[in-house]
Image (cartoon, helix red, strand yellow):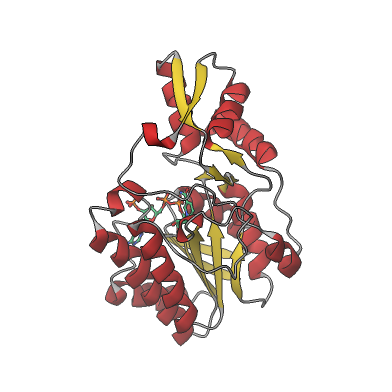
Length: 282
Ligand SMILES: NC(=O)c1ccc[n+]([C@@H]2O[C@H](COP(=O)([O-])OP(=O)(O)OC[C@H]3O[C@@H](n4cnc5c(N)ncnc54)[C@H](OP(=O)(O)O)[C@@H]3O)[C@@H](O)[C@H]2O)c1
């Protein structure tokens, strides 16, 4: 197995690099050396490394910023995805594209399955839905993996933001009307490895098991760190954002388990593991 990982310096990219290195040669690329929106730059990288699979974890991930920078979001998330899918199709190898719970509008009130219709609320979700579609029609050998609420090494993620806030403020307020599936990038990388050992191409959801509100997620983070800040819950209307977020975006990962046997552990266990890892990471 020769794995080309795009977006290798991102939080998911870093864990993919480690997990796939155990199965053969791995090459990682990221900005500023390689922009996936630049197909002319991408082509020689693929030709020289001759991967047997390309994993596209590169993305414009600033949900708020995307509202003002639509073109940048679509360049990375749609044009980039199409370029990667075209090159992988040309070389007759599979491609992995990661997508998001933000392709859904949050009105379902039951865990979303991969076949549920997408209806993104904001630009980021729209650009990721467009990237999914581009990948799907361009390379039949695709794994589109939707995930959610990611945290991992080096990321400016919710876990790190809560810890930073708690270290500097005695009192925190966190919204309790957004429900989702917190997911450790390590677990997502392992699930990706398991899925890519099969030829069960298609669209999947990969999130840690269980769900919670942002408030309950923050509560567990503080419990594990032992930081004594007071935590209060509040409504998302108290923190207006440019990008509308789905109120309920829990993903059902059962089709992933059926396809490759990999079972995502409960989010609390995965978070505990991340807390242990960050002791050496930070
Ligand atoms: N983070 C989440 O909560 C979340 C939730 C659901 C789904 N996802 C999806 O999961 C995947 C991984 O997310 P992540 O949290 O690991 O993201 P991340 O930490 O932001 O990493 C993305 C990486 O891609 C790079 N990148 C951006 N545009 C690029 C381009 N045009 N060409 C090459 N590289 C580019 C970024 O570089 P710069 O840092 O220099 O921009 C960064 O190193 C993405 O597809 C994302 O949409 C994330």
